[in-house]
Amino acid sequence: MEYIIKARISNRHVHLTKDVYDQLFSHPLTKRNDLNQKGEYASNETVTIKNWEKEIQNVRILGPHRSYNQIEISKRDARLLGLNPPVRKSGDLADSLNITLKGEKGSLEVKGVIIAERHVHMNKEDAEKFNVKDNDKVQIKVDGEKSGIMDAYVKVSDNATLELHIDTDDANAFLLEDYDNVVMIINN
Image 1 (tube, rainbow, N blue to C red):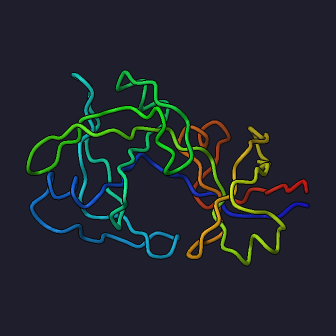
Image 2: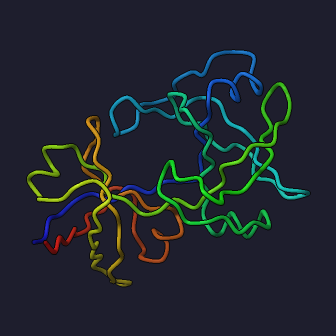
């Protein structure tokens, strides 16, 4: 079965525990704007991520605080930083790499650098409608000048809004823009 959904392009960002955040900043995390996934937001605060002499500034912190630290970068970012992080689902930090985060109060080395796996957010009602469950694989078909098919996994949560999340490398490979339509193919 095929369903049209929106693609969202996820730029590099970090999720931090309150403890790590408090070591980097002297004030609470503040909301810049809400994200489509209910309850999540982009904060006004940013960090610099640094590996040896290489760094990327103004990396957005997403809120609210999490129970783990996760630094999501693209393969292009990884090359610039001289890293080779694993591709992982959110929260799966096995073999993730360390990096230095710089905030207003100073620097701190943390573990949790990954390249995020492509995923389709959906709530429980969507999952029932599509007859899929959390962690199932679906295919995403992209039409256009650089058409193709990519795999993505299903991420079911109560607060989810139906959309595909890919990083900037995937978006560039398929010439996708934020909010472009793609086709989710479910083979069950």
